Length: 245
Image (cartoon, rainbow, N blue to C red; front, side):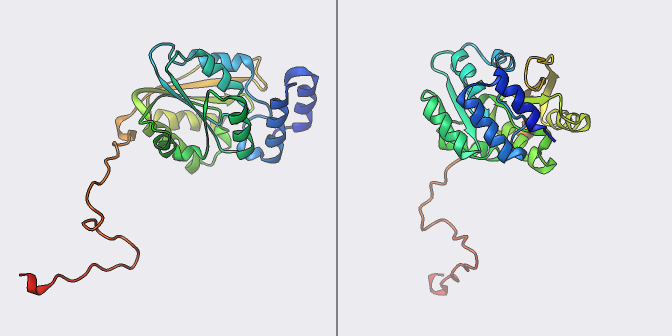
């Protein structure tokens, strides 16, 4: 359980003083199961995450759990010209805040489990990197696995995904998360602890999703409406006309 009263006093002392920080705190207090921390990612943590991203070419990068955009801004500044950044946020209020304050970022309000569909809606086939700020250790195992499957399916074969683990996470939950990543990626490593973050955090970096978790490309059905089988519940296809033989 996060001690919000103690965190609030530290935030009011200057750690998080902008309007976005308070917006995040208010949403975190109201919906603690959706937030892994009562404050947005600190600058040191955001900088470490941003440095992991491609700095050449025209990559597509996705941020899951964008919050108020503390990390989104750093990613946007780092990416080379011609790149694309898609910021996904489940909370409707925070998604509106992002869209209003980051006009150069494609903001999508939706569930991380639907990542492949969100990419398709944005006209994106696959992403080179997925950066997450999700409360991984608070998620039930089935939901954690569903999100990880969606991430692996949305990445290029040499793609990368990250997860933030705060030092307040239970050790067994942290180990379970690392094993879940290892089941889907060829390489998983932990970066040095960022002690200046609130709370201190470690970044997990996973690279190269296993082929078994890569989705096949969707091929549209070009058959006419009349030739497609009717799959409505309870529908029975007509019997063949004996006179046609």
